[in-house]
Image 1: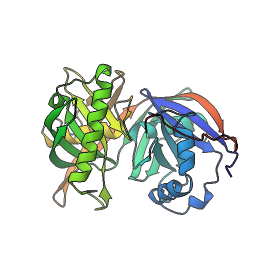
Image 2: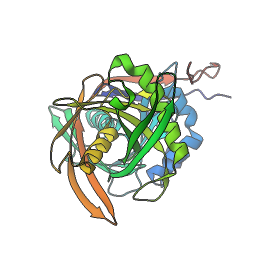
Image 3: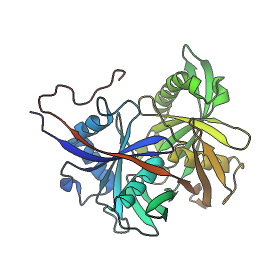
Image 4: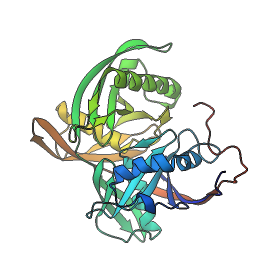
Length: 333
């Protein structure tokens, strides 16, 4: 029998990308005492129906994104966060981190501090909120260590494109495949959304079939989570990021921006402490820079930082009538 849920959320957007933050409605106590990565896995086992309820229709949509604040295991962390989307979970999310910090500070759930540390499944992320008149104007986020993992060539045979596509791979909390959009013969823009979505899904599938990837720092098995189409433009580069089963990031993507800076450093196109601006398909922006780059055990370790602004757009209470036959669905997946 279905349970009669009442789930309370704070709704935010960061540079246009939503984050639905679950603040109450289920008992998360059984998860505590473990790392956030372990809590995420347990949440997926015990509460995945909650993810579907909040992310998918009729309460969400195919491009929805969410976060679940939890108790951190690491004593240095102020809070832990699980990131989720319509078809699963991510180890790290930059826009979601900015949204969570903004919402929890403005609602008084987190005490105001100069620096707030967050335990994510990818590791500890350090944030610095800029607060004026009880409003969080922006959040600076120092991401987990990042590294360039090399290149792969993928043969595509789709109705829209038949070509060999070069993909640059960078780990920045998630494994990101970066593609120069010129390789597809297209451009980053709303008119190309559906075609780039199809290409992104196929590229990720073929990359994960072609190669077994490992986290460069932990050695754990990982998969390509995001495909990022990049377009070099005079003044400000632009991107379009495909994740989940075809979701499009409305923001410039936090981990995607970190991955792009990691790649640019590898190519000698971005220096430490050099400012980098990145623009989304909505023309919203994240500012970034590389704080540090050092060699460790034959790996170039990059410490990237981004900054951006999030806004609370609502508070919601979602319910599930036990007699309702539809708890969460998609027309396309």
